[in-house]
Amino acid sequence: MRNLNDISKGVEASKHGKVLFLDVMVTRRRNLLMGRAWRTTDVKMAIVILVVYLLALFLPFMFTWGAFWPGFTTYMVCGIFGITFSYHCNLAYRSFKLPKWLEYRRAYLGVLSLQVSFICFFHACILYMQHCRGTIRVG
Image (cartoon, rainbow, N blue to C red; front, top):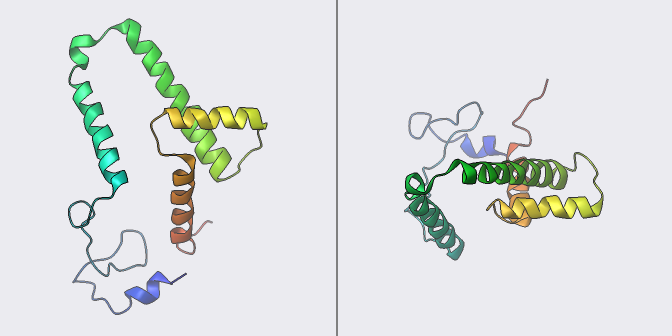
């Protein structure tokens, strides 16, 4: 893995700036939205987000408290047990051990929360940990 401090040594501080709270200089600006070709996954995610926002426009006309509470409960169960406990704590970091049947059911809750699959989530966690290794100081 490359040391980011070595990459940034030749860059002037006034040209691009410094990354906040890190000893890393920005070597070039990247336009992540319009400056690159969109992949199939990007288009699919954009369509899903657009559909959800379009459906949200109808929410004031269809709102009932009887439908709110089951929806809120489902959101909390999938978010807390699916993403936080299953994807993040259990599967990515192995913070605790669960029986396989419970591990699979909680991972399924994470899938129901319209997040990416666990493989994509785990890959992002690995990239994050590799990027932060050596830059985060504990204690």
